[in-house]
Length: 222
Image 1 (cartoon, rainbow, N blue to C red):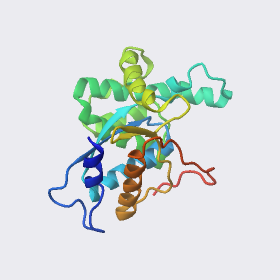
Image 2 (cartoon, rainbow, N blue to C red):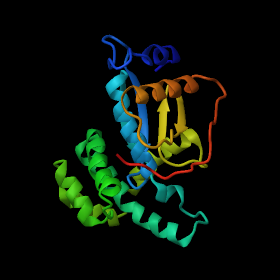
Image 3 (cartoon, rainbow, N blue to C red):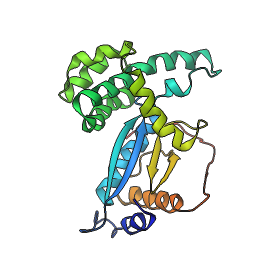
Protein backbone atom coordinates (compact mmCIF):
# COMPACT_ATOMS: atom_id res chain seq x y z
CA UNK A 1 0.00 0.00 0.00
CA UNK A 2 1.34 3.44 -0.89
CA UNK A 3 1.43 6.43 1.42
CA UNK A 4 -1.16 8.20 -0.75
CA UNK A 5 -3.52 5.23 -0.44
CA UNK A 6 -3.06 5.19 3.32
CA UNK A 7 -3.82 8.89 3.58
CA UNK A 8 -7.00 8.60 1.54
CA UNK A 9 -8.07 5.61 3.64
CA UNK A 10 -7.56 7.15 7.03
CA UNK A 11 -10.67 9.29 7.51
CA UNK A 12 -14.39 8.66 7.73
CA UNK A 13 -17.22 10.80 9.07
CA UNK A 14 -17.54 10.59 12.83
CA UNK A 15 -19.56 7.58 13.88
CA UNK A 16 -20.41 6.59 10.31
CA UNK A 17 -18.01 3.70 9.84
CA UNK A 18 -15.94 3.25 6.67
CA UNK A 19 -17.22 5.38 3.80
CA UNK A 20 -18.32 3.39 0.72
CA UNK A 21 -15.72 3.25 -2.02
CA UNK A 22 -12.74 4.20 0.13
CA UNK A 23 -9.52 2.30 -0.61
CA UNK A 24 -8.95 -0.60 1.75
CA UNK A 25 -5.83 -0.19 3.88
CA UNK A 26 -4.02 -3.35 4.95
CA UNK A 27 -2.30 -3.80 8.28
CA UNK A 28 -0.20 -6.69 9.54
CA UNK A 29 -0.36 -7.51 13.23
CA UNK A 30 2.00 -9.82 15.15
CA UNK A 31 0.84 -11.14 18.52
CA UNK A 32 1.77 -13.52 21.30
CA UNK A 33 -1.38 -14.81 23.07
CA UNK A 34 0.34 -14.50 26.45
CA UNK A 35 0.83 -10.72 26.27
CA UNK A 36 -2.00 -8.63 27.82
CA UNK A 37 -0.87 -5.49 25.99
CA UNK A 38 -1.00 -7.23 22.63
CA UNK A 39 -4.51 -8.42 23.51
CA UNK A 40 -5.70 -4.87 24.20
CA UNK A 41 -4.15 -3.59 20.97
CA UNK A 42 -5.63 -6.45 18.96
CA UNK A 43 -9.10 -5.57 20.26
CA UNK A 44 -8.39 -1.98 19.20
CA UNK A 45 -7.64 -3.17 15.66
CA UNK A 46 -11.00 -4.94 15.56
CA UNK A 47 -12.62 -1.66 16.59
CA UNK A 48 -10.68 0.19 13.89
CA UNK A 49 -12.05 -2.17 11.26
CA UNK A 50 -15.56 -1.05 12.22
CA UNK A 51 -14.90 2.65 11.60
CA UNK A 52 -12.11 2.75 9.00
CA UNK A 53 -11.60 0.83 5.73
CA UNK A 54 -8.91 -1.44 7.13
CA UNK A 55 -8.23 -5.15 6.84
CA UNK A 56 -5.90 -6.78 9.36
CA UNK A 57 -3.73 -9.79 8.60
CA UNK A 58 -2.78 -11.70 11.73
CA UNK A 59 0.60 -13.27 12.44
CA UNK A 60 2.31 -14.99 15.34
CA UNK A 61 5.41 -13.78 17.14
CA UNK A 62 6.89 -15.29 20.28
CA UNK A 63 8.02 -13.71 23.52
CA UNK A 64 9.80 -16.98 24.27
CA UNK A 65 11.91 -16.62 21.16
CA UNK A 66 12.43 -12.90 21.75
CA UNK A 67 13.77 -13.55 25.26
CA UNK A 68 15.69 -16.71 24.46
CA UNK A 69 19.20 -16.39 25.92
CA UNK A 70 18.42 -13.09 27.60
CA UNK A 71 19.28 -12.40 31.26
CA UNK A 72 15.79 -12.20 32.77
CA UNK A 73 14.49 -12.92 36.30
CA UNK A 74 13.71 -16.54 37.10
CA UNK A 75 9.99 -15.84 37.42
CA UNK A 76 9.96 -14.40 33.92
CA UNK A 77 12.01 -17.31 32.58
CA UNK A 78 9.31 -19.68 33.87
CA UNK A 79 6.65 -17.59 32.13
CA UNK A 80 8.64 -17.79 28.90
CA UNK A 81 8.84 -21.57 29.18
CA UNK A 82 5.05 -21.64 29.37
CA UNK A 83 4.78 -19.20 26.46
CA UNK A 84 5.98 -21.75 23.91
CA UNK A 85 2.77 -23.78 23.94
CA UNK A 86 0.16 -21.27 22.72
CA UNK A 87 2.27 -19.88 19.87
CA UNK A 88 3.13 -23.38 18.68
CA UNK A 89 -0.57 -24.27 18.65
CA UNK A 90 -1.43 -21.08 16.74
CA UNK A 91 1.25 -21.72 14.12
CA UNK A 92 0.21 -25.36 13.70
CA UNK A 93 -3.44 -24.36 13.36
CA UNK A 94 -2.65 -21.77 10.69
CA UNK A 95 -0.46 -24.23 8.80
CA UNK A 96 -3.05 -26.99 8.79
CA UNK A 97 -6.32 -25.06 8.59
CA UNK A 98 -5.36 -21.76 6.94
CA UNK A 99 -4.23 -18.34 8.11
CA UNK A 100 -7.84 -17.22 8.54
CA UNK A 101 -8.13 -19.32 11.72
CA UNK A 102 -5.57 -17.20 13.55
CA UNK A 103 -7.89 -14.41 14.66
CA UNK A 104 -10.71 -16.62 16.01
CA UNK A 105 -8.22 -18.92 17.71
CA UNK A 106 -6.30 -15.98 19.20
CA UNK A 107 -9.60 -14.55 20.42
CA UNK A 108 -10.61 -17.85 22.01
CA UNK A 109 -7.24 -18.27 23.73
CA UNK A 110 -6.91 -14.60 24.69
CA UNK A 111 -10.37 -14.37 26.20
CA UNK A 112 -9.61 -17.31 28.44
CA UNK A 113 -6.20 -15.96 29.38
CA UNK A 114 -6.91 -12.27 29.86
CA UNK A 115 -10.59 -12.06 30.75
CA UNK A 116 -11.12 -15.37 32.54
CA UNK A 117 -7.60 -15.66 34.06
CA UNK A 118 -7.16 -19.21 32.81
CA UNK A 119 -3.75 -20.85 32.72
CA UNK A 120 -2.47 -21.47 29.21
CA UNK A 121 -2.33 -25.21 29.77
CA UNK A 122 -3.49 -28.10 27.59
CA UNK A 123 -7.05 -27.92 28.93
CA UNK A 124 -7.33 -24.25 27.96
CA UNK A 125 -5.86 -24.85 24.52
CA UNK A 126 -8.17 -27.81 23.87
CA UNK A 127 -11.19 -25.70 24.85
CA UNK A 128 -10.12 -22.84 22.57
CA UNK A 129 -9.47 -25.13 19.62
CA UNK A 130 -12.82 -26.85 20.10
CA UNK A 131 -14.65 -23.52 20.33
CA UNK A 132 -13.47 -22.43 16.89
CA UNK A 133 -14.01 -25.81 15.24
CA UNK A 134 -10.39 -26.94 15.06
CA UNK A 135 -8.99 -30.34 15.91
CA UNK A 136 -8.44 -30.37 19.71
CA UNK A 137 -5.55 -32.79 19.13
CA UNK A 138 -3.54 -29.78 17.96
CA UNK A 139 -3.09 -28.90 21.63
CA UNK A 140 -0.48 -31.66 21.78
CA UNK A 141 1.95 -29.61 19.67
CA UNK A 142 2.38 -27.23 22.61
CA UNK A 143 5.14 -29.46 23.91
CA UNK A 144 6.65 -30.28 20.52
CA UNK A 145 9.29 -28.55 18.40
CA UNK A 146 7.62 -29.78 15.20
CA UNK A 147 6.43 -26.34 14.14
CA UNK A 148 9.26 -24.26 15.62
CA UNK A 149 10.94 -23.52 12.27
CA UNK A 150 7.72 -22.05 10.93
CA UNK A 151 7.15 -20.20 14.23
CA UNK A 152 10.61 -18.66 14.10
CA UNK A 153 10.05 -17.56 10.51
CA UNK A 154 6.78 -15.81 11.42
CA UNK A 155 8.42 -14.22 14.46
CA UNK A 156 11.41 -13.03 12.44
CA UNK A 157 9.18 -11.56 9.75
CA UNK A 158 7.65 -9.25 12.33
CA UNK A 159 10.56 -8.50 14.63
CA UNK A 160 13.06 -7.86 11.84
CA UNK A 161 10.89 -4.94 10.75
CA UNK A 162 11.17 -3.16 14.10
CA UNK A 163 14.34 -4.42 15.80
CA UNK A 164 15.17 -6.69 18.71
CA UNK A 165 14.70 -4.08 21.45
CA UNK A 166 10.89 -4.19 21.29
CA UNK A 167 8.16 -6.73 21.97
CA UNK A 168 4.59 -7.52 21.04
CA UNK A 169 2.42 -6.24 19.47
CA UNK A 170 4.05 -5.28 16.19
CA UNK A 171 1.98 -3.52 13.53
CA UNK A 172 3.07 -2.88 9.94
CA UNK A 173 1.19 -0.35 7.81
CA UNK A 174 2.03 1.96 4.92
CA UNK A 175 5.47 0.41 4.55
CA UNK A 176 6.45 1.06 8.19
CA UNK A 177 6.35 -1.20 11.23
CA UNK A 178 5.97 -0.22 14.88
CA UNK A 179 5.96 -1.80 18.28
CA UNK A 180 2.58 -0.86 19.72
CA UNK A 181 0.52 1.16 20.16
CA UNK A 182 0.46 0.19 23.82
CA UNK A 183 -2.84 1.46 25.18
CA UNK A 184 -5.31 0.73 27.96
CA UNK A 185 -8.21 0.37 28.03
CA UNK A 186 -9.00 -0.53 24.43
CA UNK A 187 -10.26 2.55 22.52
CA UNK A 188 -13.74 1.99 21.10
CA UNK A 189 -15.68 3.48 18.21
CA UNK A 190 -14.44 6.74 16.78
CA UNK A 191 -11.75 6.97 19.48
CA UNK A 192 -10.25 3.83 17.94
CA UNK A 193 -10.44 5.40 14.51
CA UNK A 194 -8.69 8.57 15.61
CA UNK A 195 -5.81 6.61 17.12
CA UNK A 196 -5.54 4.70 13.85
CA UNK A 197 -5.41 7.99 11.93
CA UNK A 198 -2.50 9.04 14.13
CA UNK A 199 -0.66 5.78 13.53
CA UNK A 200 -1.01 6.29 9.78
CA UNK A 201 0.29 9.84 10.02
CA UNK A 202 3.45 8.92 11.90
CA UNK A 203 3.95 5.87 9.65
CA UNK A 204 4.20 8.25 6.71
CA UNK A 205 6.73 10.58 8.39
CA UNK A 206 10.25 9.73 7.12
CA UNK A 207 12.67 9.18 9.97
CA UNK A 208 10.01 8.93 12.66
CA UNK A 209 10.94 6.32 15.27
CA UNK A 210 9.53 6.77 18.72
CA UNK A 211 6.99 8.30 21.07
CA UNK A 212 7.01 6.94 24.61
CA UNK A 213 6.10 7.64 28.21
CA UNK A 214 6.28 5.50 31.34
CA UNK A 215 3.22 3.35 32.04
CA UNK A 216 1.58 4.20 35.37
CA UNK A 217 -1.18 1.57 35.27
CA UNK A 218 -1.61 -2.02 34.25
CA UNK A 219 -3.86 -3.48 31.57
CA UNK A 220 -7.55 -2.64 31.92
CA UNK A 221 -9.82 -5.25 30.35
CA UNK A 222 -13.44 -4.47 29.49
